Image (tube, rainbow, N blue to C red; front, side, top):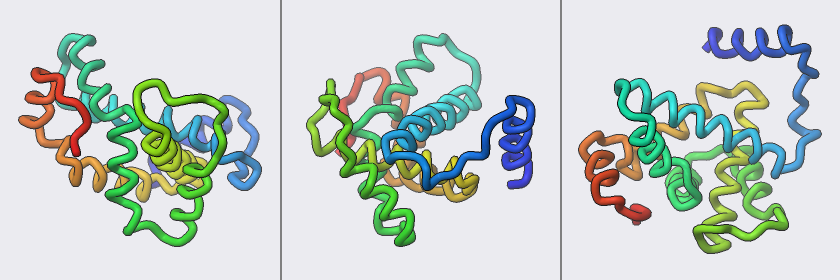
Length: 162
């Protein structure tokens, strides 16, 4: 994916960014950027399906971008991870954030944080093909990428898919 890596290199050059050294970041710092990257990928996926009211797109994004769905993806992909990826995800899961989850239980929140940490790690280390492949696998397995399922979910405001 040279185009994506070229984009990251372009960002580094044009914004005069310091080189991102993954070992210098805490798991929560990686989760911070991972949350944004995951959100960007989901929003890109949603808008690629065609323009619609922003409120509908936001509602659709909220089905994907929440702790419960991210925890579900965590459980879906964990057996496919390399030892290094699993170690990163566990570090994120076990990090003490100092905040309480608002809309879910602590274990779900920790699994979501582990997933976000992994996404951040893969982004910072420019392993973008792997990052997208893991997200795609997770979404397919949770059956959230099936357009009928998404429409039904939005219409019925279905909670977490178990």
